[in-house]
Image (cartoon, rainbow, N blue to C red; front, side):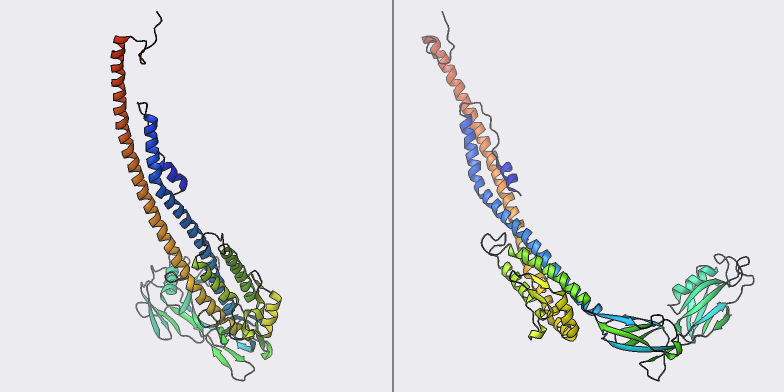
Amino acid sequence: MSTSTTSAATAAQTFSGQSQFAASLQQVITRAVGIASLPLDSDQATLTTLNGQQTALQGLDTDFTSLQTSINNIQTALTSSSLTTSVSNGSVVSASLGAGAAAGAYSIVVDDLGAYSTALSNAGSTPVTDPTSQGISSSTTLTLNINGNLTTITPASTSLDDLASAINSQAAGQVQATVVNVGSTASPDYRLSLTASQLGPTTIDLTDSTDTSVINESVAGSLATYQVAGQPDVLSSDSRTVTLAPGLAVNLLSQSTSGQATTITVANDPTALSSAFSSFAQTYNQAVTDLAQHHGQSGGALEGDSIVSTLTNVLQQLSNFSNGSPETSLANFGITVNDTGQLSVDGTTFASAADANFSTLVATLGGTSTGGFLQAATNALNSVEDPTQGALKIEENTVTNEITAQNTTITNEQAKITQLQTNITAQMVQADAAISALESQLSYVNGLFFSITGNNNNPTASTTVG
């Protein structure tokens, strides 16, 4: 409830009396309501203070939540973007990085890309010219056999399209079914084509309800083969995506020329980390700026509140982190705080220090749950942002509850004042009516008296000129 709303609600009602004392009676009502409203004014001032505190806390909550997001972004940059790959021959292989990848040079020779086993269905008794309505079998249930693994296939109808759709949805990804035209455009002959999902010699068969095969021909596939790091052993794979090293997956694209090796170079790349720290610095500085408004005398809505020192301490933990030695402090990587408490990231220094001591940087940062700066920052921010135990969340909930209680108090006080005003007004109305009746009687008696003694001295009579 705002102050203006309270003042309007507690203004004395307009009192219109009939007696000559009506104005005095109105003053009695106004004074009584004014005195009764004094506690309400104090309650309203308290509510205004609480609302200011709530707004300030919500602003700081936004700042520290953004800091949590920034820390998570640094973690993401460290785990997924701190390494980069280059391939000496991108037509032979491509590479992707995952968890556990490490910097280094890796080589591979692709001997054979391998092949997928395929199968083609028999021709129908008449060529299938419309796969949406015609099919290769009248059976409503068929059996798919992949290397002896039997799967029941139940298409929605006997059409070739529905059979292919059923295999793709019911065969658990063992094969891919397509409808192909082995005839001409003018005289189409649609068949069912099945392709194994893995490289290598795979037995593919499809039989109808009479256990008769509907497959006309099948071609066995072969495994992909390659060599790693110049080793003489030939490795094989049923997939064209192979794991060359922990966290390093290589996609085989074509056969190497004359056994020529392709080199995949995995290098440290601090660019994403530098960008993530720059974003972190901006978020950090916003929190410092907003928190500074509540320091010292005339320090804003949270002046003297212990939450200010609590949050200040959290920021200091973030900016002054060291993992036990000067080499593992953030300042060693160009992340420093100036005299005004603002955090800055020197991109050149960061890149240079990271290139020279990338392993130290990684050890310094650690992980949100494995130690180092990221875990320390996560724990510090959780201490104020945890939904149930965080200091900032607890403070916000406390103020919110106080605002609710204060609004209830004001509502109750307002109701009491309104009732008081109603009761006093009713009393003044009665008093005014009684006074007005006495005034009327007095006027009547005076009229009788002066009618006998003459009207020259009758204050209620009009002057007559004779």
